[in-house]
Length: 488
Image 1 (cartoon, helix red, strand yellow):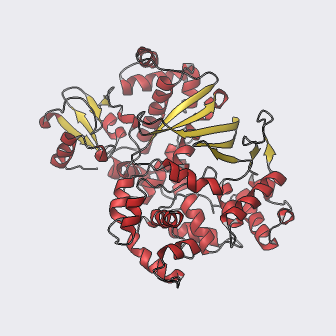
Image 2 (spheres, one colour):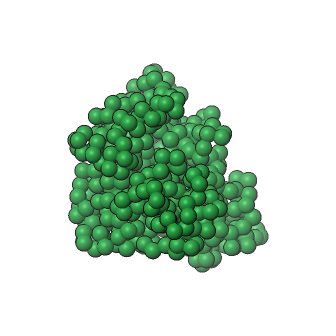
Image 3 (cartoon, rainbow, N blue to C red):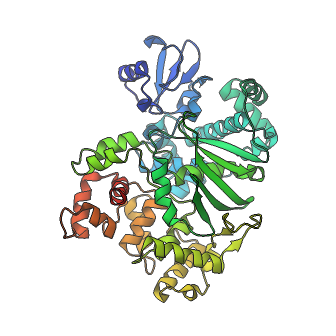
């Protein structure tokens, strides 16, 4: 990916945080690469080379700066790329798709050939999928080395390395120091630890309205599975190597633009997956300023955006869970759907050890195989809706792709609406939150129509959809701001 040298250098000289993560600067005189906000002395223009992503800089032989830690830069459009295939490929790599599978298998999941996938990655990012997977593993390992007291063997496994020798070699190649040398340097800086738990920092691009995020999630929390109190989000987790409760909260004021993920030490081997899911649930890879700038050109959205800066699009911890929650919410209130979800979990969910406290989340949301033949209507919902949930569960059990990442929003909607009982509103909401489609827009939603109404008469779904064409490709974010205007 080519970057304009003069434009990047002017941005570099300002150290404006809005450019953070949009490019990386390789300094030929030192051999390091930095973020635009690095506090080090600005290098001479002749010594600068600019890259679209960290993997490209490392591929050119540069190592990460120890002052600005470019591996912590939030996800940006440069990483997501301009290609939908590249964007979805990066999401899968971030979730660990290349830790135990090949680039060919990743290409198959994306519906393209492996050679074409490599070509797209090099075109948009300047690095191959394998190189980006290696960078992801090494950078996540570096975080664990610096932020935890875990043994190096467990860090290697948690980061996706199959053996410690490869782990040591890649960390030394990328960071110029061995894992033990990195840890020793952090100990000198007074790194703290928490007994029995691991706390991982999750960086994001400011602003981020944490209270608005919790206000959206709280009424939609599934009783027994999720809880929100005191500014802390808690939920149960069902992973092949860990079952328990995790917590997410905002870092203290002045401690940086980060969320804090707190997990039991027994979750070491799935830390990468947990971290990736937290980032999806809280939309930490978004660029809120860029999205607000584009949507703010609409005269009616502009004051809403100004009143709610840093609003994000909440994702989903589990795609199947979110899809079931969306079906339960058909034609009833948010509170009513949450009550039904709680009854469903009480009837079919599995309990975990929560130290005997019913206030703490203590139930696991049912898996597809748990609901495929369950008598769901017995909890008090219409039989047609229960049939819809069972059909979804059976489709997933049979290997269906309705909840898989799709080549486009249109394909995702076609897959979802092909299932019994799932109409456009439900499909758009599932695509918006579970599939992370930024352009999904449930135009028929009563709340959106109320928010956009200029008089007592509500706009039709088709009229609102026509208006929303001007908000593409960020219609899902426009929906979030419209919903926020109702609550305020």
